[in-house]
Image (tube, rainbow, N blue to C red; front, side, top):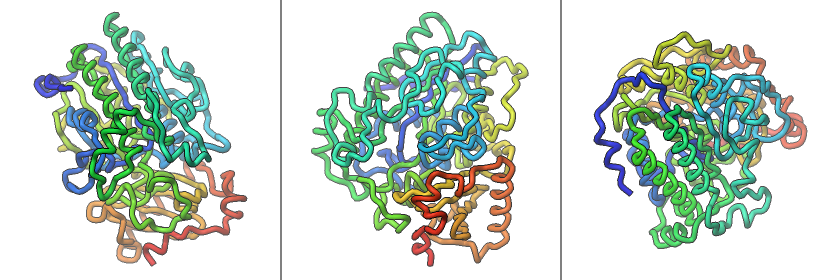
Length: 475
């Protein structure tokens, strides 16, 4: 399919009408999973096997953020953070399973949009993974409290989960997209502004794909970084569903008043199939040049694709400023408030609006955050990950990762070391101390969940006696 019109429309200023929003959230999609690099500074950081022509097109429609993060290395906490504009640590939802300490009496994106313009119609299709019904937060149309299972997920069934199998509607990518298009058509026919969140189950396991996509990927030469035919076929089906959505976007002439947002809930799988390695460095990872992946706060687990397009946003523009999923709530609210009315945002937001960045092509300084840096918190043991509770903070070019049981921290300059290969803890002790103090202060401020409060503390971590093997990379 061709989307020529998407690149022919002149840049526009803010529309006076209430804008529409299409938010596409994928699952477990890594930063290097696309067939074109997200960051021109790292031309080797792309997939040498996958086919993602439509995703590439969508990203080029607006601004891509090269240093974008999910709020968590696992799915549910990221989804909470997006809806409520707060860190997983503040929300006290830091793991996808186990006891949930979150206060669900929160204000979410649809409620705020309806406070700006009561005509807004809001829908959520696909994976929700929040333990309250979407209607509580202003969604008029939704699938309920869905998790992984409706997308074809068989945990602990290795052959089904990682062997791959055929389906006419793999991961429901086509039916979810069709329902999204239908919702958009209904809203546009009634001239009602809309917000729709299309939360795809892809590309989370199980590896499910159509026969056509599998045959196409089977004929391709395996890449050095990526070569899994089943996974590649599943991603191709996702990409083709995006093609349908972009075609509808063009056919309905939505370009003048609709923003398209795209990101992933966390980084990609570090290897396929899943491995139990307790933090031992992988010899080869799927996210390289980033290290590690899902479940970890190293770059492979939290750096994700992220783009926003819409009226006034320059095509193929790029920002290198760090952004995070919980920035979306204040950003969407500012974009929607075209009349510049006084809007009361929820208390204790951690996100900041990135609208000024969107319309200055990355030339502006990012607005000051409510708290220093972007904070991540994963106080859990996970034998498929680093296997020790850890937290992290990104401030400017520096990132510090703190391991709570080992009582050790790692410091990296991401402007020079995207692979987190060189620990600067001894070379820059003052910087490390400043970041560690800022991280500790924030976690104390929000009364963040402690490692010993996690259900992984007694069994998996043996009351804290287990320490990660990851430091072998640096010792």
